[in-house]
Amino acid sequence: MATQWGVRGEVLTAHRTPPACNVSLLAEFGTVVSGHVARGRVSEALQLQLGPTAAGEFVPTTVASIRRSCVTVAAVEQGQHATLALRNVAAATVRRGMVLVSRPQQARVTWAVRATVEPITAGAPALRANTAGTLYIGSVRQAAVVRTVAPADPGAGTARHAEFRLARNPEYLAVGDRLLFRWSGGYAKGEVTVVLPAIDVDPGIQRRAGPAKAATGAARRLSGLGKSAFGASRPLSPLA
Image (cartoon, rainbow, N blue to C red; front, side, top):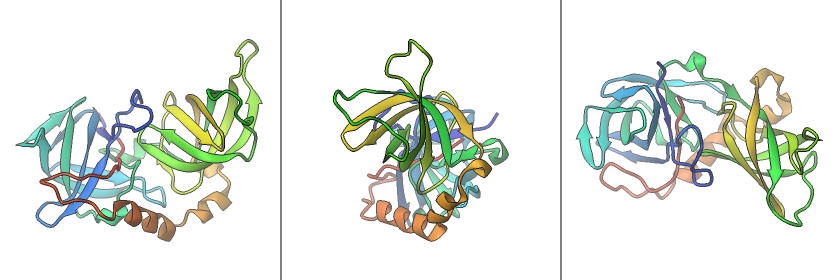
């Protein structure tokens, strides 16, 4: 069974995949992340894959140490929260929304999803194609653009079918994930219905999200982290 690691989401705490949240760099431990085990079991010396990177890939890493409730433990099970120290991972390459998995070939990485959404802000501007905003899906928070919008099934009220394209990095997302989309003057909530293969996404979007830009953004988000005892203070996230 693949092991999934994620973080408590700031916006959607009921996200199907609990989110992974904190990252720091401590010389004695390596890069430290914290979150919840979504599936399986994580133990010391376990070899996992961290990703997706800006190129949509996963990189190998090893669990050097595990702490739960500030106590060193040998392993953590599904549903438990813990802090992991990872070997051979630079803090600047770790960003919010990433996950740890045992079988990266089973992790579906995407630049775009389709979802059924419903506006929740009275008097907000209509959600239209080419609307830019921020998309929240569990621990993922990223700029996105609405590519298409269509009415949902008859009798669905204000619900709409929409396609969202991520603007910076590919992410690991799954059907059934809850989402929140925020744009100028409005909010819409919904659920992912289709995860589009990365190959189906406009390559222009991927070119605008090059590795250098992604790495710079990650370094900026990780700057100023406090060196607490085996922990961190800024949000981040891994996969399954």
